[in-house]
Length: 427
Length: 158
Image (cartoon, rainbow over all chains, first blue to last red; front, side, top):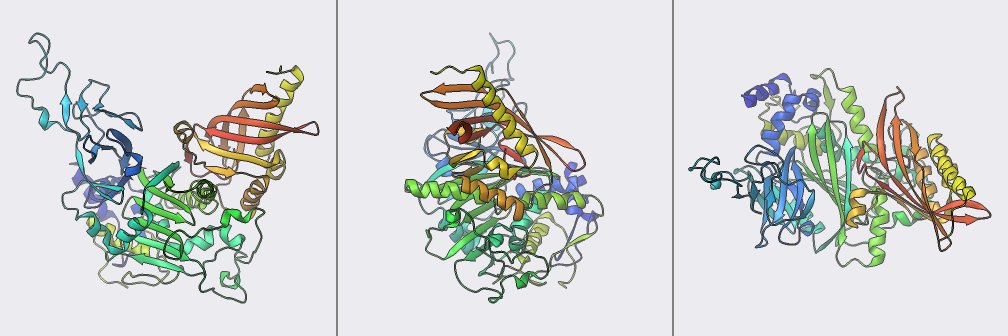
């Protein structure tokens, strides 16, 4: 019944253009849309990033994650196989595993001590047969019918993904060649987990996925690199998309073309930004030690719908978006290096982590920008965002950073999964 | 273990008072001067701290890096417009082998321009002092925050 109620929410908003160059504000604020997303996006035919194998290297290791807002246990069974299951007891709906991470033989619910093995099967029910034939469960109670709800799991180079849907294609096919390569590029050998960062943002999660697919804001909102003269929006960079346009790689490379070479600040118009060239007292923060075969110094790979892989210089992390409501989400970032990093490289990565995350010198602004939009669009759900940088019409790879085309790619795929009709013609 | 004289006790508590006041009054450039040249300042979540994971939320391993961060806040970064209010509890002071250190709990409230206040962060300061010219400075400060899930963003120092 609730599914029907929610489904009707999509009729409340109109996407006037099939190319999603207009996005109705209501899509970010409507709780019914949010509920429908849980069903059709996060539990739909997509692969959600769950965790890294190097976070759960040993049999019995587990971590708690969330898919959308559904609590999920990811663990490694005795035989080394990976499993993911909804962290909700099949008895009374309680959280089963309460520790955020650890090692367990079974997951035991504290409420009535039902226990589940590492694959999610119900293995123990205290007093199932009562005491001396009195009480307990009916004789025909079948434990095998009461497993935790399981997700299908695939791992690519140690990055674990999960899906609720039987219709999701194999992971490599879902990622496509460009994004399979991006996963393999980053997870190219054994990792060393450096730690976690968490950030709560009081706005809709799609304002953040938009942000990830909007290279245009990088050199306008995040002024650290501009101020200190190390990168500009008119530098070499661009965006790559998969065939659906759902995933995005925003990239920038060392060297290459400059914008207005005579006066690099000129492209910034009269904003008073972009014309500074102030030196850091400690410029070592900005040093990049080349470590990939390509020339990318910035590669942020956004995977539909809940993940971003991040290379900002030598700062490497994977971010998982956990939705809380239409008005709140959490970003959980797992920072890592490689097991063979020497002490100097690890120290360099840890210092460079200053650039990323909730306190990141080139990223802190995103939290503010998302909340500014979320607050202002509380009314007028039929009004629209304008998404035209890089042009209208079909989405394709972008050869510069002055573009928000990847945002349209996200929304076109989102509308398809949500069953939202978009305008007749791509204007 | 050296004794903590009443005079030393007062100096340390007063130091924390000054530390919080400079941040609350947005005198960040003066706050930086509380640190020694080779000081290390970091904010780390309890989650990482307890697991022995080295990642910080903010890490400056010299006063120059602290200067850069404050300069960036002034000139480059855009963040939520707010006022800070640090409430720093009584410090536990240790004086061992000539090293003076202290642990003090803190609460940090953030208020918007419209006067809406939220509890932004709670945790503990783990501070090691240096004494030069009769003046206390920070040689190492590790802020272990219980509030590892940062609300919105973390711009101004804790």
